[in-house]
Image (cartoon, rainbow, N blue to C red; front, side):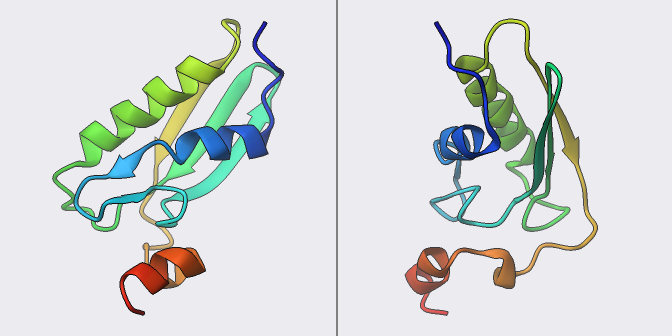
Length: 102
């Protein structure tokens, strides 16, 4: 039986999605802006490091795949790609910034 989803569990699952250009998971990279559970809907607002990100479609597909793998069958992920506020390195975790030497 799949455990009831929580934002913490879903964020942990999303750490499996790696931005191939940076080699860092999208949570530590700061691409996840919001994650909420509303009934059986899992709403995720996320961004890319740049609107011209060539890997955007692949990252979105990976996010949906990872969420579907950990969610009970009745739950549906809803992804929203947003550009405001723009992504910046200040959104990264300390560990991610340290990896880049920032």
